[in-house]
Amino acid sequence: MPSIGVVVLLSSLITLVAVIYQNPGPYLTPILASLPFAIPQFFEQIYCYNAVKTNSESLPHAECFSVKNGHFKRVFSAESDIVREARTGHVIPGLWDGHGHLLQLGELKNSVDLFGASSMSEVHERLISYKSLHKTAGNSEEWLRGVGWDQAVFGQWPVASDLEFGSEFKDLYVMLDRIDVHCIWVSEKVLSLLPNPLPEIPGGEIPAKGVFCDNAMDIVLQHYPEPSSERKTKFIKDAMRELNKFGIVGMHDAGVTPKHLKLYGTLSQKEEWSVRVYAMLECEVRNTFCPEKAIEVASSNDKFYMRSVKLFADGALGSWGSAMIEPYSDKETSSGSLLVNATTLTRLAREWSGAGYQVNIHAIGDLANRLAVNAFEEALGNLCPDASLHECQSKHRFRIEHAQIIHPDDQHRISQIGIIPSIQPTHATSDMYYAESRLGKDRTLKEAYRMRSLLPLNPVFGSDFPVEPANVFEGIYAAVTRRSPKTGLDPAGGTDGWYASETVTVQEALKGFTLNPAFAAFLEDKAGKIEPGAYADWVVLDKPLEAFDMESLRKANVKETWVGGKRVYHRPGPEDLAT
Ligand SMILES: *[C@@H]1O[C@H](CO)[C@@H](O)[C@H](O)[C@H]1NC(C)=O
Ligand SMILES: [Zn+2]
Image (cartoon, rainbow, N blue to C red; front, top):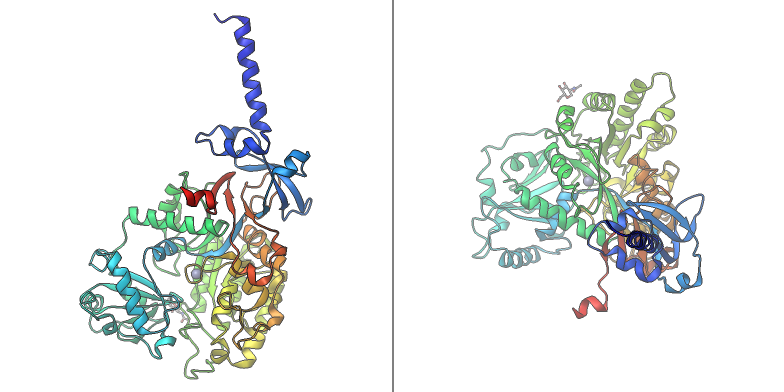
């Protein structure tokens, strides 16, 4: 039997340890946070910085917060001067990308980067240098993948035989996504797998031998050898590492098939899953009703949420695929194509929302946007026969993904109902070079790439990575300046900004990457802000966001990213380079 003295000694030791854990001060905090075991989780830990921007109405600015069990517990000002001296860094809430593609980003990190390639020979050079590092790529089991080409730089559509060059590039399986991932360009070897003649696919185009757009991509994708689960797990890990680097703590995955939902469900329970994912279900066959598939999927947890569905109304503007009310100005025989007719779109919106899902429709052209609003009106009327559309929408939170070109009448309807636009500011600055020639001056002025006009609807901002870089600071820059984050210029080569009346402020843009995506994912109590009870997700910057001048903002990088009270990224410093 232990003596009284030992018991007293032990219990005071335990108390002392507990006190230190609960209030470790600036020196012990980082040490405790880095402990390899879970003890810190059980105690309240305090973090202090030069300033904390909270996005919270009750306390917009603070200096310290405490974290317990992965959530913020208290938010407050520094209590002592010791603390005040020791802290560095300026905190903002963890960033969210409201529309991206997680697996595809990881796949891109593991494929040839063709973005910005300015000629066919540059494409060839990049393929050759990739192949020299990845010897096995291009066999029948593991096709050589790439993304980022644009026919505009070739002056014409590429063809399959363009991928037969030099000694290494004979008889390889090659599949390269267009910059907007709405077309693929494949090699002769891939073509040899396909039926001859090729089938006609509604909503699909084959503009050249070896190029397949929108629905026609399925002809090829049926033959694409699926990467193994191990490879997909690596894709996800690589993607999350990249996202954390940009201060991203959460993302909305705009199209996850049932099989991948299952993989997400499993992986999200592991420690390495460092980005919260709000998934939009995409049926194996696009634009169908497949709720039974979703039910099989592992249930949501704090890092993975499943309650929305993605439908597709049309294709993209770059390949004349977006569905327009009037023909294109630079292709008067075409007004794009719908991927689904109005009857089916409306039926799907009713069915999915009736089954309890948030309905998110991809719509780029003004016809597609009109049909999306029509479908939502029907579905809302069906869901809440006794409430106004606006009231009903505020519960169900339907979204239009991209919402790029919207007729003024439909902009008005969207505002009346309160439909959430999901906007990618860097799409505007990538498309601004050709948008006016596709649409003409009048349509561009009144309909295209609205931002400020849609602000009252609390638009979700995102990047659509990997179509655009996942860098949120480039997104903020594009929204605030309407200039290219790559060059700092507008299409005229100036700095006025492209249709500058649609710019937003830095604070509004930040909201688009924090509070608005939280609301659009039904996470307004948990994400996008630093408040007691919210997830302990935050980003440390070198200076306040407002203190960056615009030109340094587009190149800004974060110092640290924290998810659930755990540091998932820190910028390498001199001490890291030394080791
Ligand atoms: C719409 O599409 C569905 C499915 O492809 C088809 O069965 C239906 O006839 C079409 N409706 C109209 C009005 O074209
Ligand atoms: Zn997308």
